[in-house]
Image (tube, rainbow, N blue to C red; front, side, top):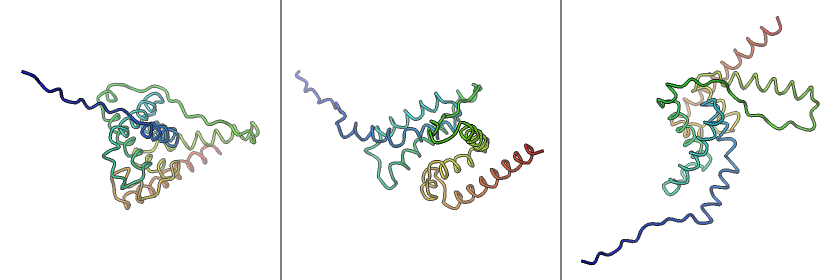
Amino acid sequence: MIRRQRPQSTYEPDDLDEQRIEEWIHHYGHDLKWLAYSYVKDYATAEDITQETFIKAYQSYESFKQEASVKTWLYKINVNLCKDHLKSSYMKRVVKKGTELFRSIPSPRETPEELVLRQDEDEALLAHVLALEDKYREIIILYYFEEFDIKSMADVLNTSPNTVKTRLRRARQLLQERMTTEGSSQSE
């Protein structure tokens, strides 16, 4: 009996696919890694999640309906992967030790004293943001650091715009209270 060979699907990425991925990595890679770090507080894990974000996006691009921007879509994938990681049994068993902050390249226009003061202020603010409860931390990061609008944040977080506004208001209050408390305790 002669059997017909079925054609095997051998999908080869074309130049357009490679360009698209490179563009995503160039435009969103650092910010997605920073967002992932804000969730998992581990640099290596944040890199892994960011890489997985691009892999998932590449694999599911055909099903992307383009109802939202690519940026919103990528952030949504990233946030979901972070939440999945935090819910995993691995995270429940392992205690993370130590954190590493993303370092920015110093501006050549700043004096060393200005640079140290700015870094201290930035680290204090970042520490306060990272200490917030997840639902407030993600709102602050998406709004202030990633410059998302309310509707885009609602899409990324699968919630209503009113919930986003409420959480944003509450997160601002919490940050202000913590920074005011720290400022008054340092001046005493």
